Length: 80
Image (cartoon, rainbow, N blue to C red; front, side):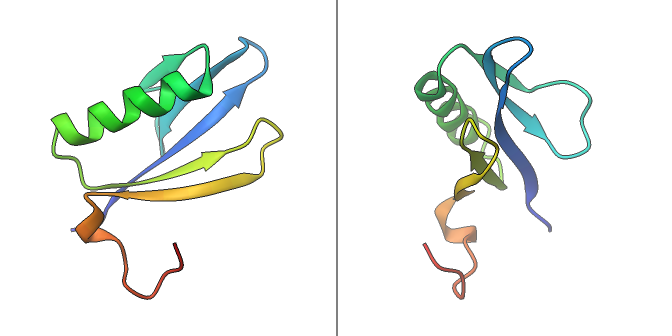
């Protein structure tokens, strides 16, 4: 089964951070600070037993990091 793909992005028009699932029209989660959206995302991933890849972007749009939930689903050949 393929992992769901999410991104955490800054939305300058509404001045907030959003967790958006690939292909979705609406954000799954929204928070005013990046630290808050990261905490909400972790709770959601652990609570729902999701199998997902989350790419985190910086405010300028560049990728900062990628996380895999659960950790056991992380491809062994990838860095990080």
